[in-house]
Image 1: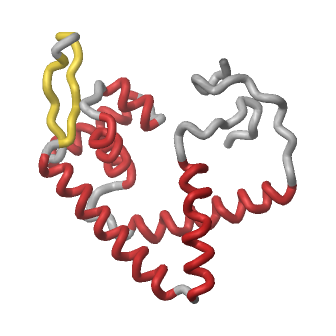
Image 2 (image 1 turned 45 degrees about the vertical axis):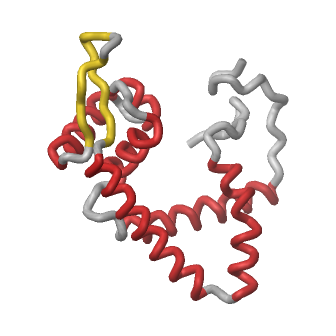
Image 3 (image 1 turned 180 degrees about the vertical axis):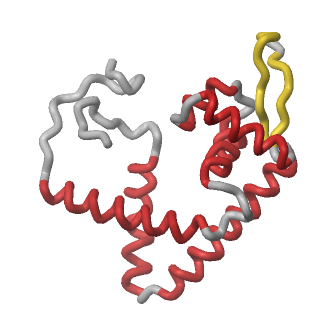
Length: 164
């Protein structure tokens, strides 16, 4: 198995300049789109939103599990979770299987906040998509399955692929 988990070892990566150009364009477009979407996030920071989304999707989680999922250090995540607790969108409770640990879970206010942010995102993007020419809207819809597949955390990434 490779360093990235359950993905079998893969043959060496042969880079295709056409794919590299598409990857660059996709990365830049997603970055710009993410910046635009950050404006519509109901007063929550990107790191808080990411952690809350992960907690709601996978929780309840221990802090270490959440830090691994978020790919940040435990001290950084501790500060993020403390802010989420102060805001009243997550709840910390004792881990019934380990008295030394606690579990973090999204509460009703956290789920409402995520729904609100999601509505803002969908509303903003829906309007923007509606302003595209019809042929661009159709190409975007046709590309969504491939983009979703790329975003899937289970899509293999060869261990020798370039990383930033």
